Length: 374
Image (tube, rainbow, N blue to C red):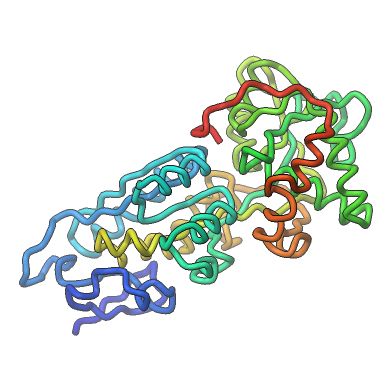
C-alpha cells in the first residue's frame, strides 16, 4: 500500500481498499488518521470512480460566513492533494431547527452547532453518533471558542462594565429566552456562573439571574429576534451576545451607533463539531468528512477562524490573522456546572430552574421568532 502524508492530519495514512469507505465503528472512533480513503478517491486508481467527492455540513446560522471560508479552503486542499473535486453542501440554520430537521430525516455528515447539549440530544435519541462523541476530537470537539460580551450604545451612557451593572436601577437587558434559544442558554449560564463565583452560592446566583430577567423588557425566543429588538426596535440598554457576533453587529449597526463592552470575566463558549457515523456509513464518505473535522484544528483553519473574531485554539493563529481580542478571565460549564448535560438537566429541562425563574420574572414576551433564527 502507498502512504501519503496530509498536512491537516495527525500523520501518514494507509490507502485502503473500497471496503473501508463505510463508517464502521473502527473508523469513527477518532483513534487514527483520516484522509484519502480508497482507490475511488485516488487520481491514479485503476478502478474508475466518481470525479466529485461530497459531504453535507449542517451549521448554525451565524456561522455561515465562517464555514463558507472553511469549506472553500478545505475543498481547495483536498482537490490539490487528490486531483478530485470536493463539493461541500452547506446547510445553515438555527441549531434546534437543524436538530429537528435531522430527527425528521435530513442526513448531514458533519454538524457544527451552538452547544454540546443539542448534539447530546441527537446521540440520546438516535444511533447517529455515540454518547462519547466529544472525546473523539481535541478540546471536547470544539475547535474554537467565543464568550459572552455586552453590546451597548456608543459612549456607554449607562456605564455598563461588568455583570453586576446589568442589575443596576434603570438598566434594561436584552437576551433571548433560554427555554427556546441556545444563545439564551449560554447567556443564562454566564450570568449564573458570574454570580456563583462572586456571591458564593447557587441561591445567590438564582436571585441574581432572576433580577436580570426582571430587567428584560422583551423576551424573544431567538438570538436573532433579540438582536432585532435591540438594534431595530431600539429596546434595551445592553444586549448580551457572543463576542464573535458582536463585532459584526457593531459594524452593521444601522441607525443605532453601538460599541462592545468586554466584562472582566465571562463564560467560555465552546461550539462543537461532530460527524454522524450512521450518515457517513450510508454515504460512504467517512474519510473526507472526518478529515474536515480534523482540518478545523490546523493552522490554516485556525487563522480563518480568528479572522471572524472567534478565539482559535492555536493562539498564534490570532496573531497571524492580525486580530487581537481583549483579555478576559474565562470560566467553564464543566467547572461550575459539572458539564453541559448536568447544566441542561438542572436548568433547562421542563419545570427546572430556568422555568421556575422565568415563571416569576416580570417581562413582556415578544412574538415568537421562527426556529430557523435560533
